[in-house]
Image (cartoon, rainbow, N blue to C red; front, side, top):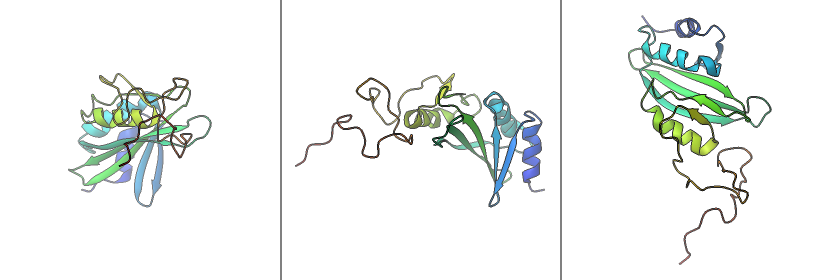
Length: 168
């Protein structure tokens, strides 16, 4: 029997009643609160009905809006059901924290580090949350860390922030 969107929704709502559902062009997205995130991820992975056994990616979206400025997005795949789902959690600019999902999928380690490096989202409980691409001292003149995928990052970069290779 094929896994339906309703099956996935029911599994998620069994552990977090306040799940918001968006279906767009046949793709399912579940929006959850940060406090429910790990319960939903664990259930989607461990429940034999859904069996989302692979974390494909974690990234963020900067909406540059008041309130939940960012969304952290988890892309999950179920090999057994040949199905994918996205799980999103809103993140405030003044408190850019979500819990780490390393206990659910070990591969979250790299994805969370990358998201931290590019957006400044802090994954609470991560065992080694440090820059992934940018140098640890990638900051502006006042010492404020810079995150290149935020909407307020200058399009031309920060003059003098990174040395450029010498011209030949």
